[in-house]
Image (cartoon, rainbow, N blue to C red; front, side):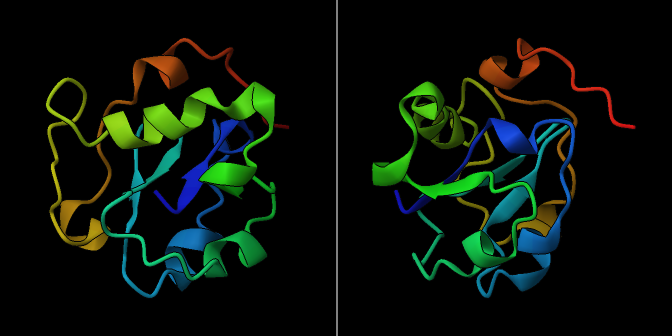
Length: 111
């Protein structure tokens, strides 16, 4: 896996990363965004535009955010979204659910 979206994105979903991703590998869940591990080309452009600093290379995830590596990967598997590798987020659109880790995360109230 290349990059991972962690907890600062939950309930924010700014979307700047989606707009700049050259391979359209950032998918939208109900409360957060997810980077497809097989579609990401490891360019890092998303990191530079994320206003919440929610995107990390998997090897650089802070210890408190480590579970998000598995959550991002599992989001695409049969037990969660069953999206597999559709080859582009824009064709899929928003998915009306999230990985259980995100579902259980405390709701962030935005001002």
